[in-house]
Image 1 (cartoon, rainbow, N blue to C red):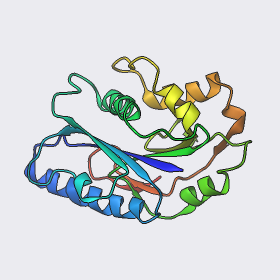
Image 2: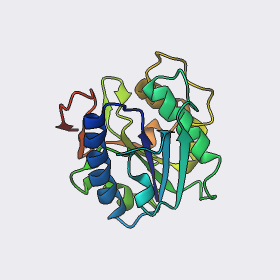
Image 3: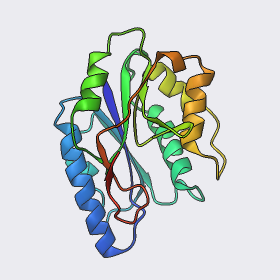
Length: 202
């Protein structure tokens, strides 16, 4: 089992940068507390005050993409591209390993999801664990066997305006693992999905 943690350093407003720094710091502390190996990718990186504090944590592998490397891409497309880049460089791991993909600034508020993934690590009847809602899935936290996670991110770049949450669920169905996917009602994660500081546990 490995975490893949994503982040982006695209905020210029100084007060908002400070808020984001705190969010990342709290969330990363929580992620690393599990003692699970963590791969990370930080895009739009520019060394400056209150840069997301990825460098302060003992990532198994950390990829930074400088500002401008993912130009003219929307948030979801940029994250997808950053994961594609990360996968090319991380050490080889087993296709059967679970990847817990998580947005780095959203904090886990309980252990339920991580414990559920651990419970099914060796269960051949479970290949993914997701939260499905309105014919799509929440992509800020989900688990998928590395075999399929790699396959998903080997796809061509997602066009602008295409819903990554819907694309990911469609992929799960297209490769025949939807019946081997556990669906949870809650991920137990504190998210700020609209960037308006409207936090909610999802």
